[in-house]
Image (cartoon, rainbow, N blue to C red; front, side, top):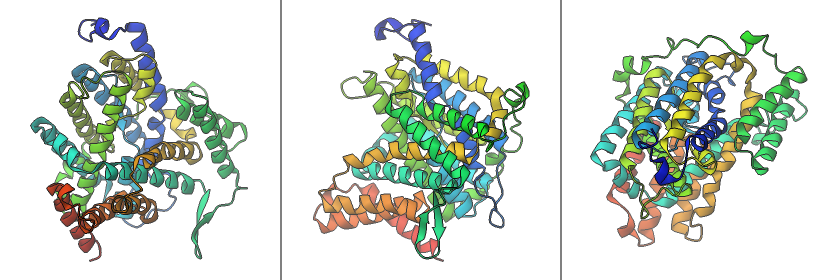
Length: 445
């Protein structure tokens, strides 16, 4: 084992790798409870006609298994201390844009995730994935990440009434005297304090403290006895295989845009995470990531497995940097993290205490962290600033990640051509320009 993971080469040991694996798990354990809440549209009391909910218990099991499978593959095949789980932002796009906004059945949406995963595998094996990543301007990549952050934060604010609808101004400040809204605000403050103080699992601990506070003041019903904490693993039956059964439903223009969005967001989310984690751990070799194709394949395989189980796109998590900061340097840390996700399967009864007030702080804080991408956009160049800004602002204002991407990718070639920088535009960008024009044409029909 030591020889396979090259402990001596990286100057590490079993203890350090184990601590790193536990640290990474604690930093991202919040997804076990946030993902079922988001994908089941738990915060939406009345769904539009024809829209159905996914089963939260099945999502919990799918989330834990997808995270365990993806992280295990990453650890054994790519040998990196990088953990995977259903991605934040991608789950919001799946639930709020595709299912709730687009009226697409969740079963078909899962088929779209499966299709994106299969395409990723082909692109990874052929080496095309890296070339496509390089074709998209870095400024637009940063804008997409920041826009998703604003979108996620907006969902968090509206889920608990901090922001409400208003007939005159469209949105306004909510009723801050509402007890559940106050609990969510308390959670945001606590989580911010923990993160600023440097706690590795600040988001997860913030959720725990918020849930405890909610139980103490009577806003959340506490679990009863041991059975309220530990229980049988929820059945996967409500979601398992739905993606395969509905795969034939994905061949429409709407689903083409959905699949492209899954592809695009995961493209850069994964690439950015791999580079960030490898850089922090000193794993880069001459500016390149060794075994990059294995890491990308692990990510793609995890998405395929997760979609069949019943969850949105599974991707590499930036929270893996917490494990690296704790000393993790090899895939053994990922094996520890994967084992903890499997152990977490028996704690599904805790879903009952993870209400919207408990998950909203996590959404808001993750949104803040993703918005940090704004600082690296070249705002002093108007031809860059215009499409970047429109990408960022369109996502929360239209309640759609896909629309934000489409707007930005349409305006980028226009502003660059007018500026005389048309030679800097990769041919792939012109193809995407045409596709997104068609997207808006069919959207208005």
